[in-house]
Image (cartoon, rainbow, N blue to C red; front, side, top):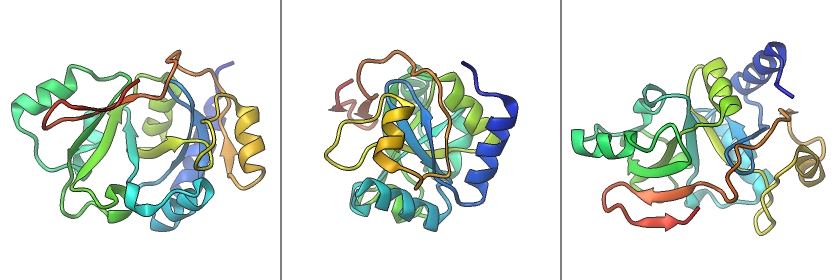
Length: 187
C-alpha cells in the first residue's frame, strides 16, 4: 500500500520540527530524523539505547543531499561509490570537519547511502535533504521488519510510522570503507 502524498508531507514536516519517525528501508524499518537537529538525534539515540560514539548512517535520495556532510571526494572515489548507488551499499566516506560529532561518533568518516528504496527516496526529497536512518530496534534486539514490530518496540514514543513494504533485501545494507574497499558489515 503506497503512502499518500499527505502522509509523506506530514512526516517530512514532523522531521523538520525535530520529530523522530520510522520508515521502511531496503531490508528493515529505520528510525529517521533531521541530522542537523541535535535534540532529534539525541532522542533517536536514546530510543535505540545506542551510544553517541558509534556514529550513524545518513540516507539520501541523491548525492547532492550528502555533499554538505562530506569532504571533497576524488573522482576515482566518487566513481566507485556512485557505481553502487542508488542501492543497498552504505559507504564510509571522509566527513567534513564541520559535520557534527553526533553523526560521526568518534570517527573521521561518515556512513552514507543513496537509497534505492522508493519511500526512503521520497521521504528525503519531501524533507529536502539527507536523513539519519538507523535500524528501528533497541540495542541488542533484532531490527524491526514490520510496522507492528516498530510499534511494539517504541509504543507512542515515535512521532509517526510510515508503514510500507521493505525493499526486498534479506539483511541490512552492507557497509564498506571507501578508502580501502574493505567490507565492514556484510549484507
